[in-house]
Image 1 (tube, rainbow, N blue to C red):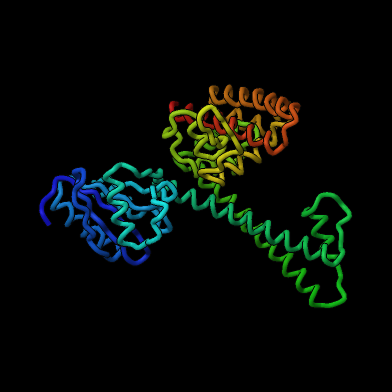
Image 2: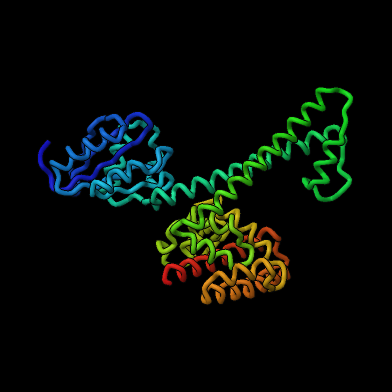
Length: 369
């Protein structure tokens, strides 16, 4: 291989082997497929060193996927630039129906040279650990929901209707244990489903306790504490927002954050015709769902409750001002939209969009402090 000044490397990563292509730095330069190599850390390190011996500058890229960010950290620790690419934002030709490791690697190298790739934000190891813990808690909540639904469906099928309005209280659990069926198989099925609910709930509680424990020593822990000064933002909402969004300073203004969360309306306009539809639902769905749920609390008049008072005392004065401004504005906004006849779902989505802007302001304030 001849010595070149600059090389742009596209890597199609997989569990066992990585396909690699190299593009020369100059426009219209050669793009070569270098083959597949073992995906182990040692082999990738040796390969990068061999490329570095033949190029003055190297730039690497690969798609975000299940293999994580280990390769990115390896390359950056060796002193080379590497980006992790958002797969959904990679330009693709509509008629291209052939997909192989080789073609993907060559395409990444070409697009990297053309500066047509969009990089995702890469967390450090500590941040990624907290994000995994938060996502494990989300999975536990979904598991609990499924098991509860199974119990409710089972009882409805057998015509057992709980006489009270609120379910899944201690009284409801006692009511379940008092139910008797003619066939012992039904009794066993109910008991197994109730036990599954108990196990899932215990798992969720343990994960929430672990989150509260690790937040205290997390580098972004102060931001988690500050965000809880906002109405509707508890520990889980705050830590999920911080874990999923990461470095808020990468958004120059709150509109960018709203767009990243998919809370801005879609648009199909041409000429003098402007058509706007529902929200785009792009980006991170976990944070978007939690913010819409939090927006429901703004249907009440502005007020600082006993629990929120302690959260406000732990926040800086500037954050307290932002929190009160958010509460007065968003409660008024909620009433105004409801008075115009807007559906509750539409109102909560609009409030969630503005709530994201106030969370952006709190994050910027904490970073500047």
